Image (cartoon, rainbow, N blue to C red; front, side, top):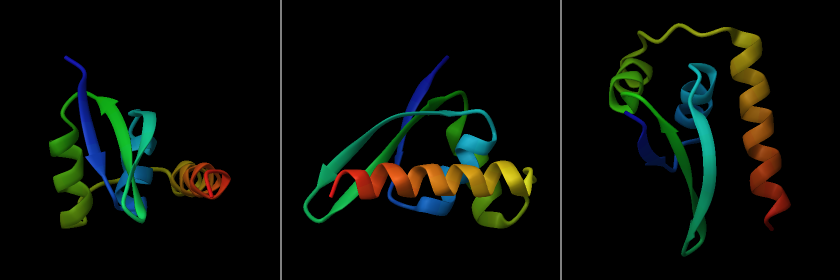
Length: 76
């Protein structure tokens, strides 16, 4: 089952995308954006990211961070 997950954290969003989740949008709130991500078990991946146990390709992670930043700055 696909679950929508929101995070303000760029690193967390990049990690989720590196694990195969999809960015489905950006939600503006006050002076920041939420990354809206869709996939299965985002909480499990998020917990692994925050605990330092998540393993992803460094290149894929970096490419996702760059892509997310591009999306953010194109909105300003």
